[in-house]
Structures are given as C-alpha cells and as structure tokens.
Amino acid sequence: MKPGEITHLSDDENYCGQILTGSYSASLKRHIAESIQAFRRFDQIGTPVTPYIAAWREHQKAIWYEFVSRHFLRIMGCGPSQVARTFRHSVLEQRIYRHQPTRQRIVENIISPEDLAGSRTDYRREVKRKGITETVYKCRIKNGDVIWLKDQAIIETYMEDQVYLSLGCLTIVTKEMEADEARKRMEAALRKSEERFRYQATHDDLTGLYNTRYLYKELDRLIEASHSEKRKFSLIFLDIDDFKTVVDAHGHLNASQAIREIGASIQAAIKKPACGVAYGGDEFIVVLPDFDKSQALDMAEHIRSLMRRTVYLTSRGLEVKLKASFGVATFPDDADDQTALIGLADRAMFRVKASGKNAVRDIKTM
Image (tube, rainbow, N blue to C red; front, side, top):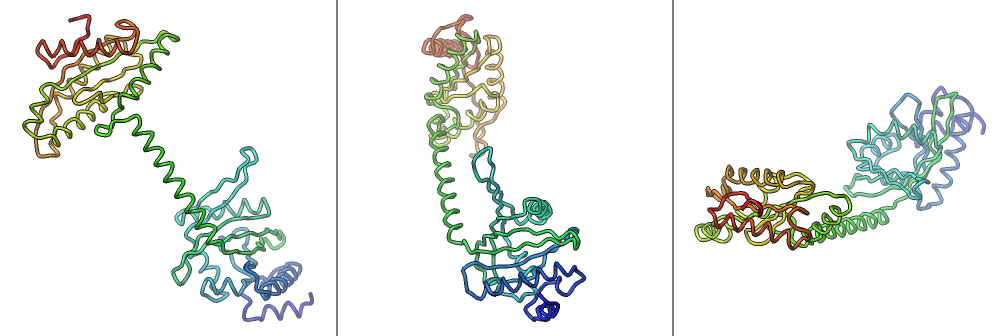
C-alpha cells in the first residue's frame, strides 16, 4: 500500500483510530490500512458478523478502535469516535470460556460489572499470551434492549510501537444465550427441588430437626461403626412435661410454635455430629456419637438447663416456661440393637415422669 492511500484512509470521516494519524511505524500503519480496507469490503457484503479492529498500548488502560463496522455502530447507537466508550459502558456482564484439558470441559467465568474494571488488565495479559480471545458480552444498548455479543479475535503484537491489535468479529448470540440462561434456570430449579425433596425426606417439617426415617438409618450406621471400630454412642430421649396444659391454655397453633422453639433449643445445645430428632408430638431424641454414659448425662443436663432458662412463645406475646424429663441409654453398654436402645432410653424417661419429672436419669441408676 502506498503512503498516499494511507493518507486517504486517515482523512476519511469514518476513520476513528489513532495509528494512521499518529507517530507509529510505517509497517504498522501499512498493516492497519490494509486491514481496514479488507474489513470494509467484508462489512459491505452484509454478513451477520460484525468485524472490528481494536488496539491498545502496553501501559494504557483505554482501548480504541481502528475500524468499526456499520452494523456495530447501529447496534451501539453512536458514531465511530464514541463507540469504545459506549460499548464499555453498555457491558452488563462478560463471560470468558477456558478449556481445561485435565478435566475435559469448558469452564465459564462470569465477570460482573463491579469486577470488570479490575479484571481487564489480567484478561489482556492472558489474551496477549494466548494470541486469541473468545468471550461473550451481555450489553444494554441505547434503546434499552439487552443483547448478547460473542467476540472472537486474534491478537497481534507490535513491540516496536508497543501496540497490541485485536482483529475480530462480533456475532449477536442473544437467542442462544437466552436459551442457555433458561436452561440454567431450569437446572437450578431442579437442583433446588431435589435438595428440598432430600431435605424433606430426612427432616421434620415443624422443627427442622431430623425425622425418624433418618434416625433409624443413623442408628444402623452407628451400630456398624461401633462393632467395627469399638466406638460408643448414646441417646437422650426427652418428653416435654405437662405439655397438654400449653395446648389447653394457648391453643394448638401456639403449642406447635412451642414445639418448634424447643427444637431450636435442642439444636442450639448440640454440635455436629450430634443431631436432634423430632420423634413424635412432644417427644425428641438426641443422638450423640462417641458419647459415653457420663458425657450423655452431662449433655442431657445441659439441654434441661437451657430449656429452664428459656422463655417460650415471646414472639406470640406470651411468656411460657417449659420443662422436660430425660432418659439416657448408651450403646453397647445398655443394649445391642437400636430398638432395645431406644426402648431403654424411653423407659428411663418414663421413670423420671413417674418420680416427679424435670430430671435426667439412665436406666441403671433408677
């Protein structure tokens, strides 16, 4: 390309760049001029893709365009000199796709508007190293519509001028991305539904504690661990004292709320792997892995003390004090199967009921 042709391009009112009019090498100017002519011819064909030539310098954050297609200007609703700023401010989200050979999959990295400014430097460093870029932009354009643009480009380096060129094309992929978003929303809803069903299968609706289905499976697991690893575990069986008086005085809805709050007291008193179980009505079981008899008795006293200090139903404008009777049993000291173990803890609790309530006992100390 002759110098006169370069001058002709730089004087063109549609030229929006800096290189043809700046202090850059002749080789770079010639390359830009040839690329602009080629891209213009391609743009005039009227293809669905939107060609562009972008540039930036090593130590400058701003990017500028040497060439922008007519279609891109129409999308952004601005002139050539404003397109870099307009496009930058239109971006709502940037998605970068990286291939991970070790995992045989494509990883999607979503960059929010808040993180875009800080990530640009790292992203440019990566594309300079790879020599190619593929990303998708979610943009809100001038008329308020949201569109998705897929950007594919090769990166060229001109060390003499400290300039990097991005020669690429943008393709509108709004329908594809909206379909992908809809698929992801559906998958997320399905996962949430599955998680809810799994939770409901093992948890009590009222208290959020585990249910008896979980209890029996957990006891089977603990018994197996006890046989193979010689580990003990204990149960606390507790029943609320005189709970019928709460129902009679305050009604079933408030009684249900009281049960919910007692469940919260149990949950607050224990730490994993211990777990609370809503056994039925106003009865609860606490499973204590690796607790011997003495430790289980101490935990039962801790729960009893916490309940004694707690005022229930304050959220309903009431002040209700509740107490409970506690029975404790330990595997394998007291029983060698789950049915017998629950039965012994239950029997110890009923003996507390018979002897005055609001206390902790195990079957061997009665």
